[in-house]
Length: 548
Image (cartoon, rainbow, N blue to C red; front, side):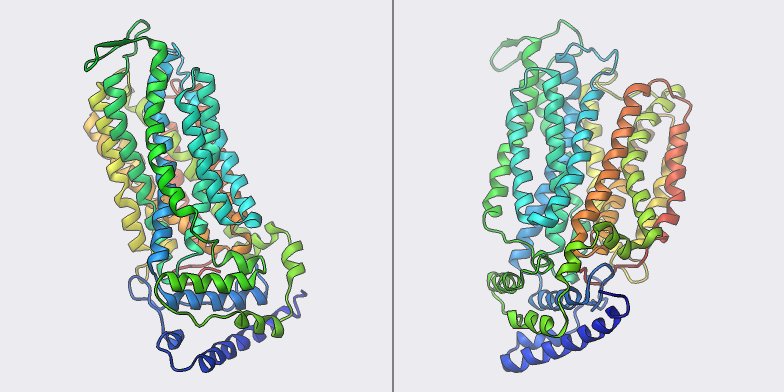
């Protein structure tokens, strides 16, 4: 479609939308449900929700159809089906956090079982392997979802996580555990990306803030992993010496060192066995997302799906296949353009060069900064008399209590963020910018800690800000790009997040004890403050605006 024709067709799209809605209302008769299409819908905090008739990076036909679909979903409202989708995808976010935290918890026991005894910090190879999987999975699964669909990718990643738990529980070697880490990382990164798309494309625009609110499940995953780890590993594994064994007091059994790893990993497997069947019980009955189907020109399936959702919620919808047919009859369908247009070109059309660079920088910082900060702040504080906190320097009770405190502080972060992004005059961009400033400042100020309790307080604050910022960034990223290239955009951002997280772990693996002058801490804090410009450089505010 040439540039000279495109504006004319967008005008036609607007007129056909108006006539379509009117025709549907007339044909349907005086039904209360039908006339809700004329209602102005409100966001969480009372803002009018807009359903735009054009979207950068898409053609006019798709823009017209997605406007119809957004209006239909708003009229149906947030019902039982959407809340089940919220819980199901939230469970995916829970598992992502649970898995990553589980590897942190089992690393000391796994290293001890492998007879590293912490001298060379070889257990960090486990996290390098995990981030290799996270990088690949965060790139590949979203890309495939643009073609194969969100439902199929969700089911595949959940099954792969379950298989990883089964294999990991009986893994006899540290090398094998690293392989399991890569496989699990591959699954969980893809699952989180698909979760985000599945939720956003299934809920009405008035509830898009739920994407940010789902960040609560990150903190819950950490909390449960820490609590279960405390109960299992802290009580039933050896210390850090080469010849130690453990005593299970209830059975008076002595377990040799080489049998500990399976016990530690079964803690992870236990939770996987609990959550995978719960997930699958709903996975088998949930539908493809409503917005994915028009993006693949499966209009009949899309209209039937909206009817099924309305029926499941005990409501009605005015949307029919004829609604989409009238769009196609008025606007020449640009299927060939959708098929041949480069995805990167569409992404650039949505974000612009400055917006694209800004978003990539934010995801790079999200992947790199927190890893560097968490490692090197302890080195810096140790030089100034604050003892390090790890499995060899503190009691297990103290160590796991810190895990619990930081996990608890992570939970309210996304809750606060989900309200701020909906507040009038604040929105997504200003919320992200404000969180970035606070994150940078608290990172810098935390270097003044002179006790473990003070360091813990700053660790909790940074945890709160970390997950609030991550929830806001995830929401904006998934909203700004239209459905046909949403998976591609998340794949690009997931690649940079995972790659720089991997780089961060490689740096900390080989240089973790060498750098103690605080430079990485100053870098991490200063970078977040500078990245306020990146937030403000993003192309548009998506508050109270229906995603395409």
